[in-house]
Image (cartoon, rainbow, N blue to C red):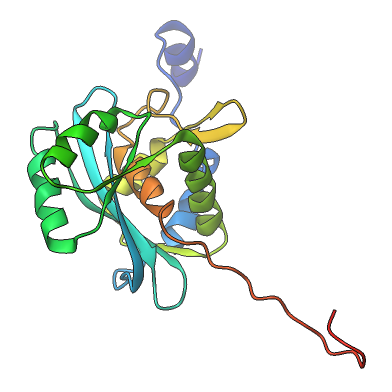
Length: 209
């Protein structure tokens, strides 16, 4: 028996994930790196916490000057004892609400942050699912740029989608790595207004069509 097969069949060691099976392929994600990318309009912030509460992440999303989405991880660190203070400082500087998935682990901070004077936007599961689709579509269609953050790259590499009814969501518990940076940027993306493609009217003698 070959070593990889022996490890899988006898020792229970899973195979290394196939990068081609990532939700967003590694080569596609790498092509979206822009170290000079920045938000021009519609800045949004979000917070996410891992289910075991060992990690927490703040992230931002918004529109670039060229209309593409920009996503970035603002802060990603161990535990959650720093979250309240960081949120208070962020809100004092930016005066923008922090989006939180009210069905996720970070929901425990909603009341705490509001008591501290931080404005919070509660996001439901349907909205998170919609944001997940928006994030993936933008990445797969050259509509997004990121800064090549290690935490976000690692999260995306190990992230797995799960379904809830017909909704597709990042699976916090089924993914083998901490995906709080990825969930945070996704929830932030959900707060960025979607661009509307203008209608094209063709003049054909009597009127538009």
